[in-house]
Image (cartoon, rainbow, N blue to C red; front, side, top):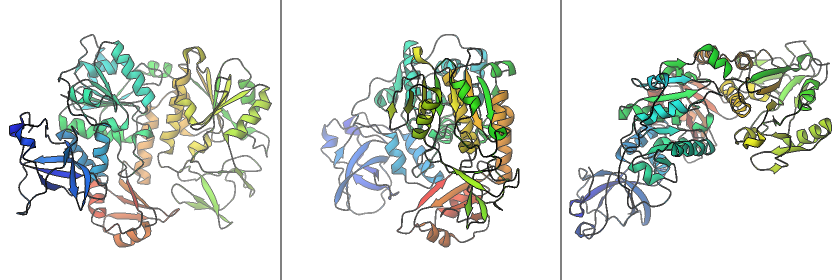
Length: 582
């Protein structure tokens, strides 16, 4: 129900206050002066300011003319702040809050414009009228598909197929990628809204492009939703509620009755469970990857634990620009055998281990324990591998005899040098056409393969995908060097063979075997109030309570509904508490 005529404004509206800890809505009366000739246009989702507990706060209209909750006199709305999320997004936000145990206000903020919007432009549909390749059009049949495309493959045909249905919502993992796509769509003659800046245009009807928050953005006569690089962890909201844009996009498309398409070179187990898989032919997929060259350091002389192998040093001296990646932020220190150089990782899940109480190795990912000896040679002397971008830059400059640049999220030094060392931030930037990378070298890929997250393998493959996009296909001369002491790892094997189908299936099988998402529903409980919360939860039937491990607990259930039903009623207490549902 919309109100286009001031005389038809409702007398009472229900408002969800913009207070994170409050998930209850309240009724307010519409001032008579608003109904007597003002420019106010009250709609579901409209933003207003109200008086609540003696102070004025913002909020969203979630219902017009609600059934009265009581017979008391209602307070008046204080101010109309313009348009906000559409009615369908209000419903989506409520679903999101229930699915990830959060407050609706947090997701409604993401769905709202940054600045007040009081008028919307004329509505319309932006549609591609040109040709679309048959395979791309078929991806939008039924409820949608999960599409596996090699990193160097052009995804443009999928974009055109979505635009042919009119007003699609296209999600990209980074704002830089979204901006690039929006520019290309404009050059094709389509009306484009890049969120969050073009909020009003998106609400009126356009091809909508954005990052994670755009999954909650405005649309008009939505035609389809496409999530590009659905494997990328940037689609996961780290703050509570820890919602994932892929799942929100799929639910939004289902509710709207339009297809959703998930696209990635390495489809996640969640994507495999969501839609049927569509792939390129084997030759095209292989051609869409660069040459992956594994530098296996297990054969080096005993005791050599330096950062640069002789093989990599030779490769770096060859002509061409090279980006060297060393990702130290948020990573664990790795243990390696002093005698043979083999990493001491978990026998069960291949995660990193740490030495506890001087005599036991404990896995930081699954909790498995084993004696502190090398599984390869039986050696008992283990050494921490402590890595850093600054040290790597200095050593590499001395090694190759030239200036080496440095690029991280917070620092840039000699970034136009022929050889540059940096974190993964270097892979998320688009290099100028006249200064493209001819090769990418991962100085220590094992810190990704053994990372703490259950999604470590998928994230490691995501880095190889970013590198592959930077250097191009093998036909174009693209090369990716990977230094490792885990040369037989499935991530490296799949990338080297450019065969990601088996890799995705293996991840799905591991999730089932280890009882990891998406095979089961899981919540991570952490923070000062975690122990008390878990005590109040107890051991309900049907739930696995695991921990503590590093002062965090994992709660698992066979279904999301059962997990939410068990966790939602538990008092969260007064101490800080984080519940991360996956």
